[in-house]
Image (cartoon, rainbow, N blue to C red; front, side, top):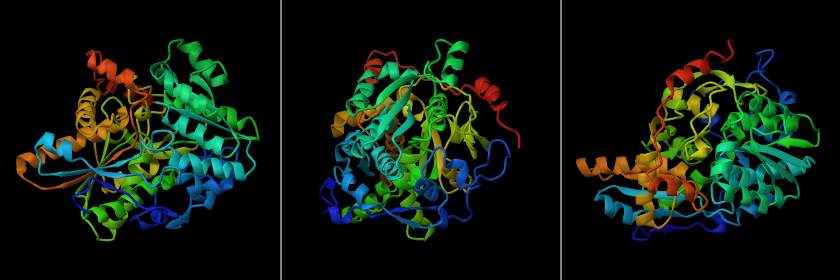
Length: 452
């Protein structure tokens, strides 16, 4: 089996439960707080935004949560996803390292996002919800939720960050093909969007602004709920199908990873791959190093402050303790639109504070160089987001070339870049530039983080 480059699970081996890492941690993450009282929130506080099934998962202390049959039926359209050995990339690098990647680009949306979009649409439809609102950066989450909503007969309305709305028109068209209504954010549709545009008519937008617009619309209508594509516990929970499959596939390959790298914006793709392996590490079954990779222009883990902050720009969401750059910080319009978020998953932030994972930040030109090298050797054009993980994997493999270590490197190729070619076009034209950490802008944004 180890001479093959692709490892496939049968339908019978697709995970039937999601894994919740919280019970296995040395200490639980701090609770979300009500924005007005600063007291821990209860289920009723979240009910205007989420159905009770998802709220229960958000606060669950159960280690495993069964996946409903209706969700598994949709998962089978693309799961299990393949694990590949990147032999041609290894040869190009001249490294003794063995590089594997879990490829989530085979999903209907072309990314890992349907892993949570499908259950979120299912639980909302089960609760009688008629429409879901959401935000999206690069458009992968909006595409996934539009697809998922179509599977369960509910409407979908998406606010796409203006920078990505303009850069990625075909992603918008894909959302519309699945039946969604799409607005650029900030938009004239919401009160908060109009406020932002009155202050800055040329605002490139941010995920925080788009979240505020989607939450505003959902909170105003009892038949509408909000769906989030990353950050929250239940979202990372759903993504653990990635890591659970990868554990079995690595065993089929006869290998165990020494290093896992994944890109991080809100944290769902990274957590989805890493959490099952971290469970095994905490149980003493491996000694894997797990590394989160983020953009230099939006380095929430490596440069952010671990404190309570809003998840959105308008301050409509609960306060969560996370690594944050300030809820109204607007990152530079890099092409990895899915990583342009001011904060990091509270659960991942907590795990980082516990010292269980590492983090690094990389500039986008180095990332695109790695993406092009990967495309020319492995035949898949990666989305801008996972090029961050690929760049880190290449660096690790080159270190192995220098030291002679035969490390096993595992990464998540969380989506293809076939709708991101404008970004590659800019790279080839020499128009792509790195945006450095905007220290003054972040310091100013942090002055408006709530004081508890």
